[in-house]
Image (tube, rainbow, N blue to C red; front, side, top):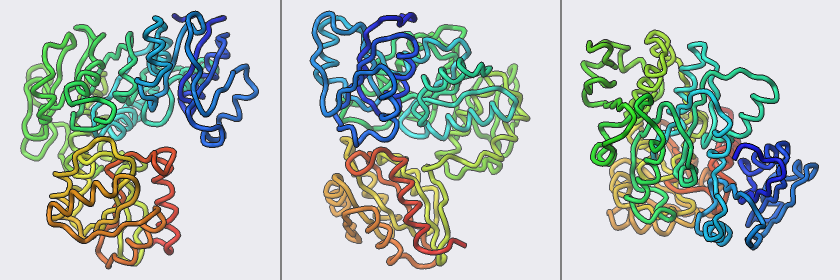
Length: 459
């Protein structure tokens, strides 16, 4: 379905991506209804701009789907697939697409798709940065915070030439993708996350590996040899496989040897650059860098350009983002650390005593391993949000008791500043989603930065 003239489309979820879909489809001649369980005032300023378009808006609930009412349903990433209108669409034979599926049906250039539990945003941004530094006209979009359909519309309306699409892809988006066909797919890792939505790791993994479903022998799959789930479960792909590892130099892939990032070219191992040249900190970011190296090399970027980009890439907002040093205390915003595995990696990235701010909306995660690491690495733990009791129970079971509970982020920052001594690090790395108190992780991270900067002049 590429001709939407006169088609009746229901969009479920009217935040950022839903609003972008509504704008695109109305201009394509579709008859659009937008629905969201949230009330209008909760959906931001963008919704008001839709009122000048022929869009029927339903807020505070969903319409009842009946036979012949809609030709297509498009759902936003945060919309659970078990809600009544999605189930009704399946029963009535109405196609249900993600925004990603809709948008990429209008993309004609090669797509690099990055998925996994952790590191997606950093790796996607780094691949895009490498491409752009090498002179390629790459669009970076997707789950990274920029709806793909918005960039498709912009490129077409403004006549912007595009060489490559570098897309961060979530499991939520892949659930309703059917013809999505990346030229290069990257699977970084798979650890327990979103188990409130995916019933178990097997189901979560099945959805993630949909990123490979339409690839053929002319395409590439970039895979993490160090990740136990990926190494054990991803095999028999139609795409050509390129493995990466921080522990070895895989045949035909990208790895580490003698303190250098190495890759194989025409059967010979070559050095790209020293590991120490990778600017972004942490062992997990070395994994992300290797994945980006593999994707860029497979896309034809020359080694010199890749190495130069690795040494200059500054990282991304809300992911181990330095905020300020105040009174000798370093503050770091890791609001995008929305699961325990991500926080484990954040804790391992620093050597200073850490005051950790965590909590938010639980996603079915197990906090046992994180609790053990908190006991060994964290000077003080400050909790907020719906998951606070669950995290507290886990850390107390591990024998850790240096815990404060706060009702909001303002209280967390104030308490952290009071507890911190020069040489300490205050880290916001929640291990949970933001939706119990914030619109998204960005709003949470932005407020943290504002509160930190309000403590005093950074030096």
